Length: 477
Image 1: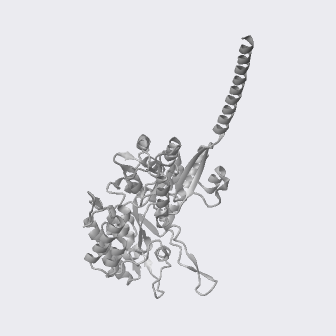
Image 2: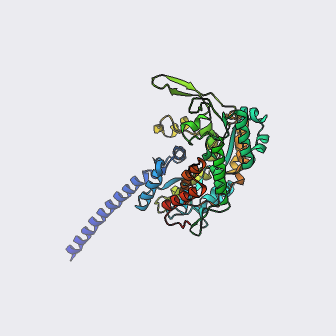
Image 3: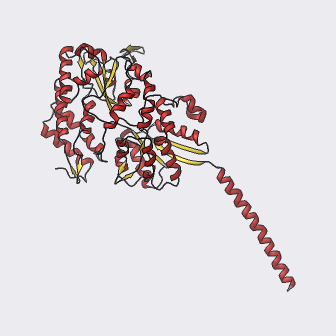
């Protein structure tokens, strides 16, 4: 019996020894795992969010950010996101552009971020940026930008055709669409057709979309607001009367009007009086394209300089109608295992006062970011001037742009203060997830009507057919 007890005691001691070793091994493994950085996976269509991600990593060195950039070309970004989310293989955070953010907000793809609203209220986040990301009372994303629209015009041409370049007086001249059209007529007549009011009728479509009284879809049925009919008529007038350069937005001819390198089919020089662009249009579109360009001489390896530097010859006003254009929202993907971390990133990007100031003032230079991550290369950076989503931050920093490059470009005018006046008046409550598809369906019919290739009835029929093809579940009468 004693021998049996001794054997049992020995076995027990041996088991305890192994158990102790096993516990120590598990503890060692746990420690090893805890020393590994947490991984935050972010997908975006823009390097802007990558800049934010690097800055975020600087504040959280214990976190590893895996950033994936996917172009928006032909809807590639949206398609890849949907495929990944449907397969349960999505990232933790996604960036959403204004043209398709509503589609995702109205889906079941995103986490509820309503608990971050108190932070938004403290920062006086512009309500329209919150409305854009709210569905059925639930907030699913936040934006670091507010993008009220503006109207930029050439000062020298204003003096030439209207006798003044004073922003207040020009605002009176173009204060609504009737005045805007009349001003276009004056410019054409006085310039003998050598100066256009706008480069493209596409420049003012957003104004009409933004000022509709009804949404595109009511009770599952397509609704064509009277503003759409007005758009058709104004577009035709501008095309038929030669008030627009007939350039395609975002293509060479459209940009050419910004630096006076625009010519007609016979090589005659032409000018563009104004561009209708939002906040980001100033630092990212107008300023970079206002300088002369080097182009190849046809049939030769040589280059020549075309255009001139128009910096300092621009002014900024509200224009004919209030509108909003663009913006980027960040959201946490539903079901992410890193929800707390994803929320921390959203908070940092859109609801952190220090970060928003850094973003607006151009603190995130390439040198700054390289100190955090030396592998980013020489191009990643954020210059000053982007208009942020916090009214509190805007009010605190607006005066710092009095002598900024953006203000010098506008002959001393502080555009940040102009945007600050416009932003509280923006409303996005009519926006729906189907808006982008419907508005894209309007492009060809609108151009056909403007060019005289279709009657109004034919153009509307073409529009409705395009909507049916894009959104077969919609009732279109």
